[in-house]
Length: 505
Image (cartoon, rainbow, N blue to C red):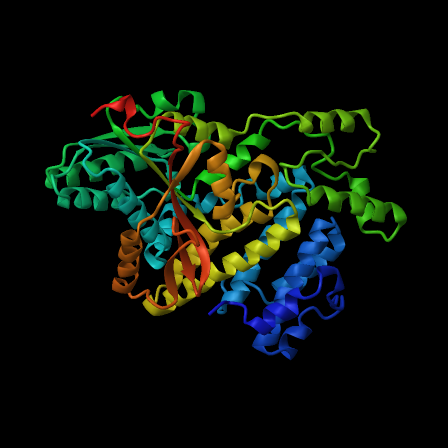
Protein backbone atom coordinates (compact mmCIF):
# COMPACT_ATOMS: atom_id res chain seq x y z
CA UNK A 1 0.00 0.00 0.00
CA UNK A 2 1.01 3.62 -0.41
CA UNK A 3 3.00 5.12 2.42
CA UNK A 4 0.31 7.82 2.80
CA UNK A 5 -3.15 6.43 3.58
CA UNK A 6 -5.87 8.23 1.67
CA UNK A 7 -7.20 10.04 4.73
CA UNK A 8 -3.71 11.32 5.53
CA UNK A 9 -3.10 12.55 2.00
CA UNK A 10 -6.45 14.30 1.73
CA UNK A 11 -6.09 16.00 5.07
CA UNK A 12 -2.58 17.19 4.31
CA UNK A 13 -3.02 18.31 0.72
CA UNK A 14 -6.54 19.68 0.53
CA UNK A 15 -5.43 23.07 1.84
CA UNK A 16 -2.57 25.25 0.64
CA UNK A 17 0.51 25.39 2.85
CA UNK A 18 -0.25 28.90 3.99
CA UNK A 19 -3.56 27.84 5.53
CA UNK A 20 -2.13 25.06 7.70
CA UNK A 21 -2.11 25.58 11.46
CA UNK A 22 1.15 27.12 12.65
CA UNK A 23 2.41 25.38 15.80
CA UNK A 24 3.08 27.29 18.95
CA UNK A 25 6.67 28.51 19.31
CA UNK A 26 6.72 27.14 22.86
CA UNK A 27 7.09 23.51 23.86
CA UNK A 28 8.28 22.08 20.53
CA UNK A 29 8.24 18.48 21.70
CA UNK A 30 4.99 18.50 23.66
CA UNK A 31 2.72 17.83 20.70
CA UNK A 32 4.66 14.68 19.78
CA UNK A 33 3.61 12.76 22.87
CA UNK A 34 0.01 13.93 22.59
CA UNK A 35 -0.58 12.49 19.10
CA UNK A 36 -1.01 8.91 17.92
CA UNK A 37 1.31 7.52 15.23
CA UNK A 38 -1.24 8.21 12.45
CA UNK A 39 -1.81 11.73 13.77
CA UNK A 40 1.94 12.32 13.83
CA UNK A 41 2.03 11.22 10.19
CA UNK A 42 -0.66 13.68 9.20
CA UNK A 43 1.13 16.40 11.15
CA UNK A 44 4.46 15.62 9.50
CA UNK A 45 2.95 15.80 6.02
CA UNK A 46 1.30 19.12 6.87
CA UNK A 47 4.53 20.53 8.26
CA UNK A 48 6.46 19.46 5.15
CA UNK A 49 3.99 21.25 2.89
CA UNK A 50 4.00 24.30 5.13
CA UNK A 51 7.79 24.36 5.24
CA UNK A 52 7.99 24.11 1.45
CA UNK A 53 5.65 27.09 1.14
CA UNK A 54 7.76 29.13 3.55
CA UNK A 55 10.96 28.19 1.76
CA UNK A 56 9.41 29.19 -1.58
CA UNK A 57 8.54 32.55 -0.04
CA UNK A 58 12.04 32.96 1.41
CA UNK A 59 10.58 33.23 4.90
CA UNK A 60 13.63 32.17 6.90
CA UNK A 61 12.11 32.40 10.40
CA UNK A 62 8.90 30.57 9.56
CA UNK A 63 10.68 27.88 7.51
CA UNK A 64 13.15 27.33 10.33
CA UNK A 65 10.25 27.06 12.77
CA UNK A 66 8.72 24.29 10.64
CA UNK A 67 12.05 22.49 10.38
CA UNK A 68 12.41 22.50 14.15
CA UNK A 69 8.99 20.92 14.46
CA UNK A 70 9.75 18.28 11.81
CA UNK A 71 13.03 17.25 13.39
CA UNK A 72 11.28 16.54 16.69
CA UNK A 73 9.87 13.42 15.05
CA UNK A 74 11.71 12.86 11.76
CA UNK A 75 15.07 11.08 11.66
CA UNK A 76 17.04 8.99 9.19
CA UNK A 77 17.25 6.33 11.89
CA UNK A 78 13.57 6.42 12.87
CA UNK A 79 11.64 3.14 12.89
CA UNK A 80 8.81 4.32 10.65
CA UNK A 81 9.13 4.97 6.91
CA UNK A 82 7.29 8.28 6.96
CA UNK A 83 9.64 9.64 9.64
CA UNK A 84 12.68 8.76 7.53
CA UNK A 85 11.09 10.21 4.40
CA UNK A 86 10.31 13.43 6.26
CA UNK A 87 13.93 13.64 7.45
CA UNK A 88 15.20 13.38 3.86
CA UNK A 89 12.83 16.12 2.67
CA UNK A 90 13.57 18.33 5.68
CA UNK A 91 17.25 18.08 4.79
CA UNK A 92 16.51 19.08 1.19
CA UNK A 93 14.32 22.01 2.25
CA UNK A 94 17.00 23.25 4.65
CA UNK A 95 19.55 23.11 1.85
CA UNK A 96 17.16 24.95 -0.44
CA UNK A 97 16.89 27.71 2.15
CA UNK A 98 20.65 27.83 2.66
CA UNK A 99 21.24 28.01 -1.09
CA UNK A 100 19.63 31.45 -1.05
CA UNK A 101 22.79 32.57 0.73
CA UNK A 102 25.51 30.98 -1.47
CA UNK A 103 28.53 31.77 0.70
CA UNK A 104 26.90 30.27 3.78
CA UNK A 105 25.61 27.21 1.94
CA UNK A 106 28.97 26.45 0.33
CA UNK A 107 30.79 26.78 3.64
CA UNK A 108 28.41 24.44 5.43
CA UNK A 109 27.56 21.92 2.71
CA UNK A 110 30.61 21.65 0.46
CA UNK A 111 32.07 18.66 2.31
CA UNK A 112 28.95 17.34 4.03
CA UNK A 113 28.70 14.16 1.94
CA UNK A 114 32.34 13.60 0.94
CA UNK A 115 33.04 11.26 3.87
CA UNK A 116 30.48 8.73 2.60
CA UNK A 117 31.14 9.08 -1.14
CA UNK A 118 32.96 5.74 -1.24
CA UNK A 119 29.78 4.02 0.05
CA UNK A 120 27.60 5.14 -2.85
CA UNK A 121 28.49 2.31 -5.30
CA UNK A 122 27.61 -0.25 -2.64
CA UNK A 123 24.34 1.57 -1.92
CA UNK A 124 23.49 1.42 -5.63
CA UNK A 125 24.10 -2.32 -5.59
CA UNK A 126 21.77 -2.62 -2.59
CA UNK A 127 19.10 -0.73 -4.55
CA UNK A 128 19.54 -3.11 -7.48
CA UNK A 129 19.21 -6.13 -5.19
CA UNK A 130 16.26 -4.85 -3.15
CA UNK A 131 13.97 -3.46 -5.87
CA UNK A 132 13.07 -4.93 -9.26
CA UNK A 133 13.07 -1.73 -11.35
CA UNK A 134 16.63 -1.87 -12.71
CA UNK A 135 16.36 -5.60 -13.36
CA UNK A 136 13.16 -4.99 -15.32
CA UNK A 137 14.77 -2.13 -17.25
CA UNK A 138 17.75 -4.32 -18.20
CA UNK A 139 15.56 -7.27 -19.19
CA UNK A 140 13.12 -5.28 -21.34
CA UNK A 141 15.97 -3.31 -22.93
CA UNK A 142 17.77 -6.52 -23.85
CA UNK A 143 14.58 -8.04 -25.20
CA UNK A 144 14.01 -5.01 -27.45
CA UNK A 145 17.64 -5.10 -28.67
CA UNK A 146 17.45 -8.84 -29.35
CA UNK A 147 14.31 -8.40 -31.47
CA UNK A 148 15.77 -5.42 -33.36
CA UNK A 149 18.99 -7.30 -34.12
CA UNK A 150 17.39 -10.42 -35.53
CA UNK A 151 19.60 -11.75 -38.33
CA UNK A 152 22.37 -9.18 -37.76
CA UNK A 153 25.95 -10.51 -37.83
CA UNK A 154 27.79 -7.43 -36.50
CA UNK A 155 26.18 -5.70 -33.54
CA UNK A 156 27.45 -2.67 -31.63
CA UNK A 157 25.73 -1.86 -28.33
CA UNK A 158 26.42 1.54 -26.72
CA UNK A 159 25.77 1.71 -22.96
CA UNK A 160 25.12 5.32 -21.90
CA UNK A 161 23.74 4.48 -18.45
CA UNK A 162 26.76 5.69 -16.48
CA UNK A 163 26.11 5.18 -12.73
CA UNK A 164 23.11 2.96 -13.59
CA UNK A 165 25.24 0.69 -15.76
CA UNK A 166 25.74 -2.91 -14.65
CA UNK A 167 27.68 -5.71 -16.41
CA UNK A 168 24.94 -8.20 -15.53
CA UNK A 169 22.74 -6.56 -18.18
CA UNK A 170 25.16 -7.42 -20.95
CA UNK A 171 26.04 -10.87 -19.61
CA UNK A 172 22.31 -11.63 -19.85
CA UNK A 173 22.36 -10.33 -23.44
CA UNK A 174 25.28 -12.68 -24.20
CA UNK A 175 23.16 -15.63 -23.13
CA UNK A 176 20.19 -14.40 -25.18
CA UNK A 177 22.33 -13.99 -28.31
CA UNK A 178 23.97 -17.36 -27.70
CA UNK A 179 20.57 -19.05 -27.69
CA UNK A 180 19.21 -17.40 -30.82
CA UNK A 181 18.78 -19.29 -34.05
CA UNK A 182 21.87 -18.86 -36.20
CA UNK A 183 24.14 -18.26 -33.21
CA UNK A 184 25.51 -15.07 -31.72
CA UNK A 185 26.73 -12.09 -33.73
CA UNK A 186 30.13 -10.46 -33.55
CA UNK A 187 29.36 -8.21 -30.60
CA UNK A 188 30.97 -4.96 -29.55
CA UNK A 189 29.95 -3.02 -26.43
CA UNK A 190 30.97 0.57 -25.77
CA UNK A 191 30.37 1.80 -22.23
CA UNK A 192 30.40 5.46 -21.15
CA UNK A 193 31.26 5.95 -17.48
CA UNK A 194 33.32 8.48 -15.52
CA UNK A 195 34.97 5.84 -13.30
CA UNK A 196 38.06 4.29 -14.89
CA UNK A 197 38.14 1.42 -12.38
CA UNK A 198 34.50 0.56 -13.08
CA UNK A 199 35.20 0.41 -16.82
CA UNK A 200 38.22 -1.84 -16.27
CA UNK A 201 36.22 -4.22 -14.08
CA UNK A 202 33.37 -4.23 -16.57
CA UNK A 203 35.74 -5.02 -19.44
CA UNK A 204 37.23 -7.96 -17.53
CA UNK A 205 33.86 -9.41 -16.48
CA UNK A 206 32.38 -9.19 -19.97
CA UNK A 207 35.44 -10.59 -21.70
CA UNK A 208 35.46 -13.58 -19.36
CA UNK A 209 31.81 -14.44 -19.97
CA UNK A 210 32.04 -13.84 -23.71
CA UNK A 211 34.96 -16.27 -23.91
CA UNK A 212 33.09 -18.87 -21.87
CA UNK A 213 30.10 -18.59 -24.21
CA UNK A 214 32.30 -18.53 -27.34
CA UNK A 215 30.96 -15.15 -28.46
CA UNK A 216 33.20 -12.96 -30.66
CA UNK A 217 33.46 -9.86 -28.47
CA UNK A 218 35.17 -6.50 -28.20
CA UNK A 219 34.85 -3.89 -25.47
CA UNK A 220 35.43 -0.14 -25.81
CA UNK A 221 35.55 2.26 -22.87
CA UNK A 222 34.78 5.98 -22.91
CA UNK A 223 35.78 7.62 -19.65
CA UNK A 224 33.27 10.48 -19.43
CA UNK A 225 29.86 11.47 -18.16
CA UNK A 226 26.91 11.49 -20.50
CA UNK A 227 26.43 15.24 -20.06
CA UNK A 228 30.09 15.85 -21.01
CA UNK A 229 29.86 14.14 -24.40
CA UNK A 230 30.22 16.45 -27.39
CA UNK A 231 27.27 15.82 -29.74
CA UNK A 232 29.32 17.01 -32.71
CA UNK A 233 31.96 14.35 -32.04
CA UNK A 234 29.64 11.55 -30.98
CA UNK A 235 30.53 9.20 -33.84
CA UNK A 236 34.24 9.45 -33.06
CA UNK A 237 33.78 9.25 -29.27
CA UNK A 238 31.68 6.10 -29.50
CA UNK A 239 33.87 4.62 -32.27
CA UNK A 240 30.83 3.90 -34.43
CA UNK A 241 31.82 2.00 -37.56
CA UNK A 242 30.19 1.48 -40.90
CA UNK A 243 28.64 -1.96 -41.31
CA UNK A 244 27.57 -2.41 -37.69
CA UNK A 245 23.98 -2.63 -36.53
CA UNK A 246 23.84 -0.08 -33.72
CA UNK A 247 21.81 -0.29 -30.51
CA UNK A 248 21.87 2.38 -27.77
CA UNK A 249 20.80 1.84 -24.17
CA UNK A 250 20.41 4.63 -21.60
CA UNK A 251 18.94 3.91 -18.17
CA UNK A 252 17.93 6.74 -15.81
CA UNK A 253 20.46 9.21 -17.23
CA UNK A 254 19.00 11.05 -20.22
CA UNK A 255 17.22 13.56 -17.97
CA UNK A 256 20.58 14.92 -16.82
CA UNK A 257 21.09 16.55 -20.21
CA UNK A 258 18.19 18.87 -19.45
CA UNK A 259 20.37 20.66 -16.89
CA UNK A 260 23.20 21.36 -19.32
CA UNK A 261 21.45 24.31 -20.96
CA UNK A 262 21.52 26.27 -17.71
CA UNK A 263 25.30 26.10 -17.49
CA UNK A 264 25.76 28.89 -20.00
CA UNK A 265 22.75 30.98 -19.13
CA UNK A 266 23.31 34.58 -18.20
CA UNK A 267 22.00 35.34 -14.72
CA UNK A 268 21.38 38.76 -13.24
CA UNK A 269 23.67 39.63 -10.34
CA UNK A 270 21.74 39.11 -7.13
CA UNK A 271 19.10 36.92 -8.74
CA UNK A 272 20.25 33.74 -7.03
CA UNK A 273 20.97 34.97 -3.51
CA UNK A 274 19.81 37.33 -0.79
CA UNK A 275 21.65 40.17 0.85
CA UNK A 276 21.77 40.45 4.66
CA UNK A 277 19.31 43.38 4.41
CA UNK A 278 16.86 41.15 2.52
CA UNK A 279 17.26 38.35 5.07
CA UNK A 280 16.48 40.77 7.90
CA UNK A 281 13.52 42.11 5.95
CA UNK A 282 12.15 38.56 5.61
CA UNK A 283 12.04 38.25 9.38
CA UNK A 284 10.02 41.43 9.67
CA UNK A 285 6.32 42.03 9.00
CA UNK A 286 7.16 45.35 7.30
CA UNK A 287 5.85 46.16 3.86
CA UNK A 288 9.43 46.10 2.53
CA UNK A 289 9.82 42.53 3.72
CA UNK A 290 6.49 41.54 2.19
CA UNK A 291 7.49 43.10 -1.12
CA UNK A 292 10.76 41.18 -1.21
CA UNK A 293 8.91 38.01 -0.24
CA UNK A 294 6.55 38.31 -3.17
CA UNK A 295 9.42 38.93 -5.58
CA UNK A 296 11.45 35.99 -4.28
CA UNK A 297 8.43 33.70 -4.38
CA UNK A 298 7.92 34.58 -8.04
CA UNK A 299 11.58 34.00 -8.81
CA UNK A 300 11.80 30.64 -7.06
CA UNK A 301 8.74 29.32 -8.85
CA UNK A 302 10.17 30.03 -12.29
CA UNK A 303 11.87 27.17 -14.07
CA UNK A 304 15.37 27.72 -15.40
CA UNK A 305 13.73 27.13 -18.78
CA UNK A 306 11.40 30.11 -18.33
CA UNK A 307 11.54 32.86 -20.91
CA UNK A 308 12.63 35.64 -18.57
CA UNK A 309 14.75 36.26 -15.51
CA UNK A 310 13.24 37.67 -12.35
CA UNK A 311 15.40 39.26 -9.69
CA UNK A 312 15.15 41.62 -6.78
CA UNK A 313 16.21 44.42 -9.13
CA UNK A 314 13.63 46.84 -10.41
CA UNK A 315 11.76 45.66 -13.54
CA UNK A 316 12.97 48.85 -15.21
CA UNK A 317 16.62 48.00 -14.52
CA UNK A 318 18.70 47.98 -17.74
CA UNK A 319 20.58 44.95 -16.41
CA UNK A 320 17.32 43.06 -15.86
CA UNK A 321 15.97 44.07 -19.27
CA UNK A 322 19.17 42.95 -20.98
CA UNK A 323 19.05 39.63 -19.15
CA UNK A 324 15.41 39.13 -20.13
CA UNK A 325 16.28 39.77 -23.77
CA UNK A 326 19.14 37.30 -23.53
CA UNK A 327 16.81 34.66 -22.11
CA UNK A 328 14.33 35.19 -24.93
CA UNK A 329 16.91 34.47 -27.62
CA UNK A 330 17.00 30.92 -28.99
CA UNK A 331 19.58 28.73 -27.25
CA UNK A 332 21.15 25.50 -28.44
CA UNK A 333 19.58 22.77 -26.30
CA UNK A 334 22.07 20.12 -25.22
CA UNK A 335 19.45 17.39 -25.14
CA UNK A 336 18.08 18.32 -28.57
CA UNK A 337 21.58 18.45 -30.05
CA UNK A 338 22.47 15.13 -28.47
CA UNK A 339 19.34 13.38 -29.76
CA UNK A 340 19.90 14.77 -33.24
CA UNK A 341 23.47 13.46 -33.11
CA UNK A 342 22.14 10.05 -32.06
CA UNK A 343 19.67 10.11 -34.94
CA UNK A 344 22.54 10.86 -37.33
CA UNK A 345 24.22 7.61 -36.22
CA UNK A 346 21.22 5.70 -37.65
CA UNK A 347 20.74 3.27 -34.76
CA UNK A 348 18.41 0.38 -35.33
CA UNK A 349 17.11 0.98 -31.84
CA UNK A 350 17.59 3.32 -28.89
CA UNK A 351 16.04 2.12 -25.62
CA UNK A 352 15.36 4.73 -22.93
CA UNK A 353 14.44 3.93 -19.31
CA UNK A 354 13.51 6.87 -17.08
CA UNK A 355 11.74 7.53 -13.77
CA UNK A 356 8.09 8.22 -14.48
CA UNK A 357 7.75 11.49 -12.58
CA UNK A 358 7.37 15.19 -13.16
CA UNK A 359 10.41 16.52 -11.29
CA UNK A 360 11.21 19.21 -13.85
CA UNK A 361 8.11 21.35 -13.32
CA UNK A 362 8.39 25.13 -13.48
CA UNK A 363 7.03 25.80 -10.01
CA UNK A 364 9.10 24.77 -7.00
CA UNK A 365 6.05 23.76 -4.95
CA UNK A 366 4.81 21.56 -7.79
CA UNK A 367 8.17 19.80 -7.94
CA UNK A 368 8.16 19.38 -4.18
CA UNK A 369 4.71 17.80 -4.07
CA UNK A 370 5.47 15.47 -6.98
CA UNK A 371 8.76 14.43 -5.38
CA UNK A 372 7.18 13.83 -1.98
CA UNK A 373 4.62 11.44 -3.41
CA UNK A 374 7.04 9.73 -5.81
CA UNK A 375 9.74 9.06 -3.24
CA UNK A 376 7.13 8.01 -0.68
CA UNK A 377 6.38 5.10 -3.01
CA UNK A 378 10.07 4.21 -3.34
CA UNK A 379 10.57 4.39 0.43
CA UNK A 380 7.56 2.13 0.81
CA UNK A 381 9.03 -0.36 -1.67
CA UNK A 382 12.31 -0.38 0.24
CA UNK A 383 10.58 -0.84 3.58
CA UNK A 384 8.68 -3.88 2.34
CA UNK A 385 11.84 -5.35 0.79
CA UNK A 386 13.98 -4.79 3.89
CA UNK A 387 11.32 -6.33 6.13
CA UNK A 388 11.09 -9.39 3.91
CA UNK A 389 14.85 -9.93 3.60
CA UNK A 390 15.96 -8.50 6.96
CA UNK A 391 18.36 -6.00 5.45
CA UNK A 392 17.60 -2.81 7.37
CA UNK A 393 21.21 -1.60 7.22
CA UNK A 394 21.26 -1.87 3.42
CA UNK A 395 17.90 -0.10 3.20
CA UNK A 396 19.21 2.75 5.35
CA UNK A 397 22.21 3.25 3.03
CA UNK A 398 19.98 3.38 -0.03
CA UNK A 399 17.62 5.88 1.59
CA UNK A 400 20.44 8.14 2.73
CA UNK A 401 22.99 7.92 -0.10
CA UNK A 402 20.93 7.24 -3.23
CA UNK A 403 17.34 8.39 -2.76
CA UNK A 404 18.33 11.16 -0.34
CA UNK A 405 20.75 12.60 -2.89
CA UNK A 406 18.08 12.45 -5.61
CA UNK A 407 15.62 14.31 -3.37
CA UNK A 408 18.22 17.00 -2.71
CA UNK A 409 18.73 17.25 -6.46
CA UNK A 410 15.02 17.78 -7.12
CA UNK A 411 14.17 19.99 -4.13
CA UNK A 412 17.28 21.85 -3.02
CA UNK A 413 19.06 22.77 -6.24
CA UNK A 414 18.36 25.14 -9.10
CA UNK A 415 19.91 26.07 -12.42
CA UNK A 416 22.63 23.86 -13.88
CA UNK A 417 23.16 22.20 -10.48
CA UNK A 418 19.69 20.64 -10.61
CA UNK A 419 20.56 17.43 -12.46
CA UNK A 420 17.58 15.32 -11.38
CA UNK A 421 15.05 16.56 -13.96
CA UNK A 422 12.88 13.48 -14.34
CA UNK A 423 9.97 13.79 -16.76
CA UNK A 424 7.10 11.56 -17.73
CA UNK A 425 7.03 9.44 -20.86
CA UNK A 426 4.59 11.78 -22.63
CA UNK A 427 7.13 14.60 -22.39
CA UNK A 428 9.99 12.36 -23.47
CA UNK A 429 7.95 11.33 -26.49
CA UNK A 430 7.57 14.97 -27.54
CA UNK A 431 11.31 15.54 -27.13
CA UNK A 432 12.25 12.42 -29.08
CA UNK A 433 9.85 13.17 -31.90
CA UNK A 434 11.08 16.76 -32.12
CA UNK A 435 14.59 15.35 -32.67
CA UNK A 436 13.41 13.22 -35.58
CA UNK A 437 12.90 9.91 -33.75
CA UNK A 438 9.89 7.59 -33.89
CA UNK A 439 8.58 4.86 -31.60
CA UNK A 440 9.56 1.23 -31.83
CA UNK A 441 6.84 -0.88 -30.30
CA UNK A 442 7.76 -2.85 -27.17
CA UNK A 443 6.53 -6.38 -27.78
CA UNK A 444 4.05 -8.40 -25.79
CA UNK A 445 6.73 -11.05 -25.43
CA UNK A 446 8.96 -8.56 -23.63
CA UNK A 447 6.18 -7.74 -21.21
CA UNK A 448 5.55 -11.43 -20.49
CA UNK A 449 9.25 -11.99 -19.82
CA UNK A 450 9.23 -9.08 -17.37
CA UNK A 451 6.19 -10.43 -15.57
CA UNK A 452 7.81 -13.86 -15.42
CA UNK A 453 10.86 -12.27 -13.77
CA UNK A 454 8.68 -10.60 -11.14
CA UNK A 455 7.00 -13.89 -10.29
CA UNK A 456 10.28 -15.80 -10.14
CA UNK A 457 11.73 -13.28 -7.69
CA UNK A 458 8.63 -13.28 -5.51
CA UNK A 459 7.68 -9.72 -6.48
CA UNK A 460 4.29 -10.49 -8.01
CA UNK A 461 1.18 -8.72 -6.75
CA UNK A 462 2.46 -5.37 -5.53
CA UNK A 463 4.62 -4.82 -8.64
CA UNK A 464 3.24 -4.77 -12.17
CA UNK A 465 4.53 -4.38 -15.72
CA UNK A 466 1.95 -2.81 -18.04
CA UNK A 467 1.84 -1.52 -21.59
CA UNK A 468 1.02 2.13 -22.15
CA UNK A 469 -2.29 3.06 -23.79
CA UNK A 470 -0.81 2.67 -27.28
CA UNK A 471 0.96 -0.58 -26.48
CA UNK A 472 4.34 0.94 -27.38
CA UNK A 473 6.10 1.29 -24.01
CA UNK A 474 6.26 -0.36 -20.61
CA UNK A 475 5.52 1.06 -17.19
CA UNK A 476 6.87 -0.54 -14.03
CA UNK A 477 4.32 0.06 -11.29
CA UNK A 478 4.05 -0.25 -7.51
CA UNK A 479 0.42 -0.68 -6.44
CA UNK A 480 -0.64 0.57 -9.88
CA UNK A 481 1.44 3.74 -9.65
CA UNK A 482 3.94 3.96 -12.57
CA UNK A 483 7.44 4.60 -11.21
CA UNK A 484 9.57 3.89 -14.30
CA UNK A 485 8.99 3.76 -18.04
CA UNK A 486 10.88 2.04 -20.85
CA UNK A 487 10.46 3.07 -24.47
CA UNK A 488 12.27 2.32 -27.73
CA UNK A 489 13.09 4.66 -30.62
CA UNK A 490 14.69 4.82 -34.05
CA UNK A 491 15.22 7.52 -36.69
CA UNK A 492 11.87 8.51 -38.15
CA UNK A 493 11.11 7.18 -41.63
CA UNK A 494 11.88 9.80 -44.25
CA UNK A 495 14.12 11.85 -41.96
CA UNK A 496 16.94 9.33 -41.62
CA UNK A 497 17.94 6.25 -43.53
CA UNK A 498 17.68 3.98 -40.44
CA UNK A 499 18.86 0.44 -40.23
CA UNK A 500 22.54 -0.44 -40.41
CA UNK A 501 25.30 2.13 -40.60
CA UNK A 502 26.73 2.25 -44.05
CA UNK A 503 23.53 0.79 -45.51
CA UNK A 504 24.87 -2.67 -46.29
CA UNK A 505 25.29 -6.05 -44.64
